[in-house]
Amino acid sequence: MMDDPIQIAAKDLANTQKVVALTGAGISVESGIPPFRGKGGLWEKFDPMEYAHINAFMKNPAKVWNVLIKEMKEIIDKAKPNDAHKGLARLEDLGILTTIITQNVDGLHQVAGNTDVIEFHGNFAWQRCLDCGSRCETAKIDVTRIPPRCECGGIYRPDCIFFGEMIPPQHLYRSEKVASNCNIMLVVGTSARIQPAASIPVMAKQAGAKVIEINTERTPLSEKISDYIILGKAGEVIKRLTAEIERLKNLNPI
Ligand code: APR
Image (cartoon, protein in one colour):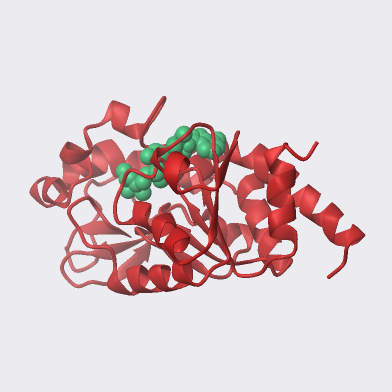
C-alpha cells in the first residue's frame, strides 16, 4: 500500500509546514486552458517567436491581439479553478502550504483562495497602456476594435511578460527566497523547460528541500532533482492527496 506515491506524499506533507508549490500550465488544463507544449499545446498552433515575443508585439500589436491575446482572453474569462487549484488552497488552510510560485497568468490560484501567490510571469487579469501606463481590467476591455486602446490613444498590452522580457525582479527575488527556505517543494504541471522558473526546484533541492513532482509525464527534473513523481492529472492527484492528508491529520492530530 505504501508504494502508492500519493500515500507517500500525503505522509510527507501531513506533518510539515513551509511547503511551496511551483505551478505551470498543466495545473490549469482541467480548467479548459490549453498548455503551451505537448499535445494540444498553444505552441503547436502558433510560433511563439512570431506571436509571443515582445518584438513581435511591438512590431504588429494588432496581429498579436487578433491571433493570441483575444483567444487567451476568451478562454481565461470563463475558466474556473479545478480540483488542483482548490486542493492547493486547502493545503494553505491546513497550514501546510505557504506560497505558490506560478508561471501561469490566469489568476486561478487566487480565485481558489490562496493568499500568497507569486506571479512569476505576471498577470493576464490586467492590461497596461503602452503610452500612459494606466491599467484596465482585461475582462472590461472592448475587443471589437483591435488593438484595444486606452482613453489617451495608447495601445493596451497584457500585464504579463512576453518572451524577451525580464522576470519582474521582485518576483524573482522572492521566489528564490521562499524556494531556499521551504521544507518541501511541490512542482505541479510544468514541463520545466523555461528558465529561470525551471531553476527554482533546483534551488529548493540544493537548500535541502524534498521535491515532489505532479505531472502527466516525466520532465527534465524527474531524474535528478525530484525525489519522486506522481504521474497523473493534477486535479485528480491533488484531490486524492488532500483527502489522504485530511484523513492522516484526523488520525494523528499534531
Ligand atoms: N495535470 C498535470 N500535468 C499536466 C496536465 C494535467 N492535467 N496536462 C498537462 N500537464 C503537464 C505536461 O506534461 C507538461 O509537462 O503540464 C506541463 C505543461 O508544460 P508547458 O506547456 O510547457 O507549460 P509551462 O511549464 O507552464 O510553461 C512555462 O513557457 O511558453 C512559456 O510563458 C509560458 O509560462 C509558460 C512557460
